[in-house]
Image (tube, rainbow, N blue to C red; front, top):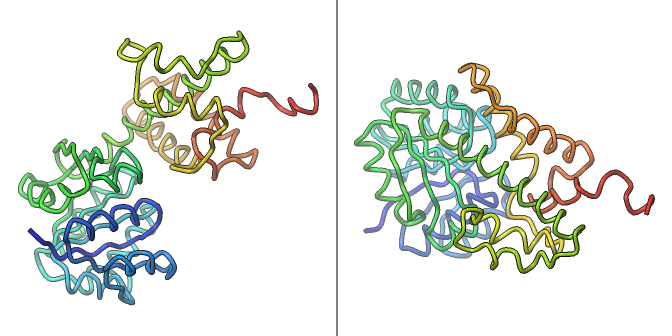
Length: 295
């Protein structure tokens, strides 16, 4: 079944989602301030418009793929935003990773304008979006979450309703804690293997199927070994998510000592100029400052 979908935000993640939606037969209307990013999708069959309001006016579903609560609010409720053009009952699906409390407030504001809201942040990154294998965690009204699946089934192989508005974003923070700790643990183990003279490239196969195995071990240890830093994510984006997790932990009085250390390492790498690099660049932390100069 073909759906009329608006996409607001055509960056690395939004672009991959948009590409997959077009490929699977959906009618996509896209808006982004970066016209070059929009052009990539129009070349594949999407329609470009000049505002989020215009995109929403011809769509039944509006997908947001943006970077912060401020940008999400402006794109939906600001001048020229989604709310100006959307018909009553339009379903907004926010796939951004933002603060759960902000999401709850946005859902209330949307309802006041007779719009529906589902928060559906993701795990898996752009490569998984392109093949329809994202993992999505959704928050919102049960019927709205079910209706959102009509579109999201094209990009996701795992879709779970976690609870009311904000529950998806809370689950995403938990996901990011688990991912960040795993990235760091695998990087640390890689360095130990290298220093001990073990062929680290063989470790993923050696541990496959055991308790230490993980998707991150299988994908990233080979990249750590070869210094394959091609970007599928950003260290500074992980800092944002870990900040969100720590904020939540303070509100719930939850002790998270491992997350605190992990967040500090990510902040140090960002301060050293590596914020825009992929998680593969975590290996730089284990080299120590000026290692090449000193050695």
